[in-house]
Length: 71
Image 1 (cartoon, rainbow, N blue to C red):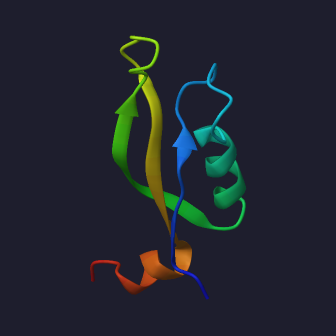
Image 2 (image 1 turned 90 degrees about the horizontal axis):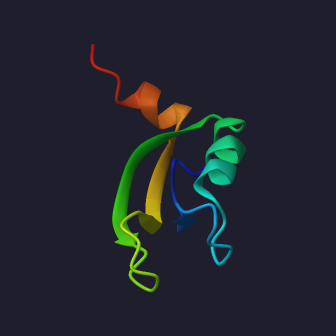
C-alpha cells in the first residue's frame, strides 16, 4: 500500500502545462488520501504575475493518518 503521494500540480487555472491542483485533490480524496502539505511553490515568473504557477502538494493515506493519530 502507498501511504504518501507527491505530485506537481498547477495552481493557476489559466496555465494548461500542469494538471490542476483541484483535479489531484478530488482524485486522491476519492481514494482516501488527504492533503498533508504544499511544497516548492513557484510563482508565474514568466508572465510577471504574483500568483502561484505550480506547487508540489503531498497527500497521505487515511491508513497513515490512523497510524499516527495522537492517543
